[in-house]
Figure: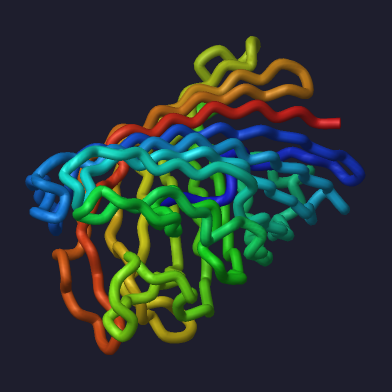
Length: 319
């Protein structure tokens, strides 16, 4: 679960560019039903699913004016899912490549030159289905034979749908060194479901994969620890989630709706035109829907793994 990039362009002037690379590492190895961690079900022989996803977002931002900017985000990811299959053996499925590209325009509601102690920005854009949502790996049946079949949603490169990205960010100075901040993003996915089914089973009983909305939000306090050296720290909360029902269109197909709440510490270092950031969110609470809760014809909700470890490392440079 996640959004398009972590770095925020808050101080670009008209005609400036910013190039940023945001790296995210996600690890999950705990199975959830509702808010309770539990033993994986019998189709996994009670053994954990282990998910690792490495993602690098290349962000290129151009400031058309002091208040208006446009950002292009190109994600590249490599993910693996290790699990037991029907042949009673553990196998690893892998997927890697370019994901779904995003293009977002952002406008500050107040002039950044005259409102340095507080401001609010809103953004909107499009997510293009450039990532392969049918990346395939070996799928093993009870006889030990394998077929090439699309990997699980958790490591797939794209979701197969065009989406609308809605974003917002705000900050307010509360002491000479401290700012309250907020960032949020919601991906609206009008497409109902793809032509990918969950598993290679008999025709007529297949459940297709849903194309869900996705959201993320952060709220906290940033403090200038050593302002003269460009060092600041922040602490707040973060939530990543997938809703039960999309804002637009139907919500059929298989999805894993739920949310994770993190404690969100981070460190930032500014050196001239460069900014380095490191964040290590700590999972505090997680909730995922109960397994096999029917949603309607051809649709279901599944239990599964939720991110236990997140790490963000970013580098941005203005030109």
